[in-house]
Image 1 (tube, rainbow, N blue to C red):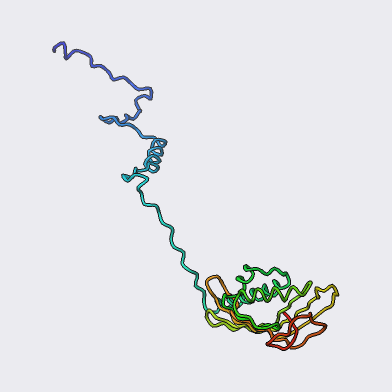
Image 2 (image 1 turned 90 degrees about the vertical axis):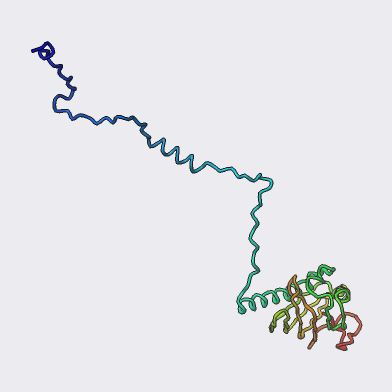
Length: 228
């Protein structure tokens, strides 16, 4: 037997776990373990990274706002809207007579340029003539209260009529504090230009009066010395 055969074989070293320890698999190639934090960081970087545009900013097309479509209402709803706007116009007109501010803005707010008005003091044609006539008539009173009621409004597209009653109470401006009251029927024709409903024709027919009217010329249409 040779010397090599008589050599005692080396015993493998025992692990701390003893003979019952299960050997751990160690792959021949090594790899880097990716942690959860590294994965989240990588995902965020891929998500938030902005790809640069090849077109310079000053030459990029700006997003255009969508055009707003004109509101379209069902016929019944549009009828109620028109009726409310006409009612508001007539109410504001009567209140404006009591406020006593008569200028071009007032005339444009209520009347068309070619308006025709039949009043107790006469008939006028045109917005400027109506402005002068109303201002002259209302200067005869110190204060007034105009009430309109029982309006019957008929609407046909961009045209309408409004027929109602009007009661007007006036305090004379001559210092006497006398009252003059008139009542009658107010008929109006209206049109709707782009800026809203306006009065194109009006007629005030006095049916009764009480008190002493102011000293003004007799109206050619009524034969009475009444006013608004």
